[in-house]
Length: 251
View 1 (spheres, rainbow, N blue to C red):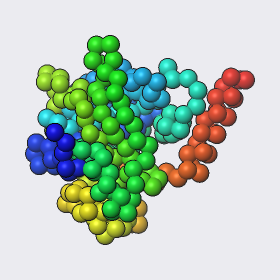
View 2: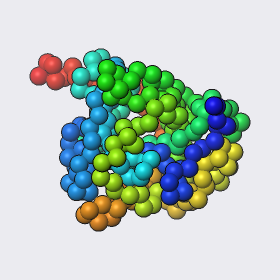
View 3: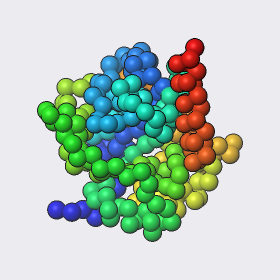
View 4: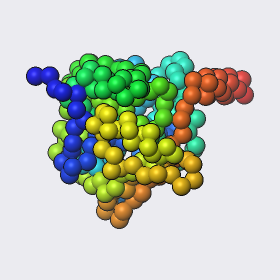
């Protein structure tokens, strides 16, 4: 059965499907999260031809914290890989978040009705040899990349964190989006069915993502400025990545 393109609520009443920490080295990022929380994230094998690799920490029955880093086995240049490699060393940057939907195409229609668009649509339909990969369709709410707006995903098969019932959980305590233009973001959220109670008005003209989880070591908060990424910024980052690689090869 097809859905209605609605945003799915999770156990506990929130809509956060997953939220991402970007790192420039996945192993170091995983180690840092384990140090902060006392729980070891699960590292996933990279999806076919993916420029990134990820690890997950369960923060709800159907929600998880994703740690996203460049895939060292990926050859060539890719914008996402370059952006991840440009992240500050030894820092965990709260960079993106996702809501789930029961019908991606119908949700996309609501996004368009709200004056925005879906970009970078990905259909992952390769489960792998032993069903090690989840399948889904996902996309970024554009135009451009602005972390105050979520990405959207429709899971075709459940994420690995949902299937692993033995994974230790660090329950979600608070999630907020602080927006420099709360009224604009709030109007779009209302149009698409995204919960507006997570929104806060910025007091300094900047936007932020903040997440607090309960862990064996106490409450842990991640908070990062939500910076827009422009096409020019992506191009500059890719060029700098190429130059750094060339410098390393000639050193």
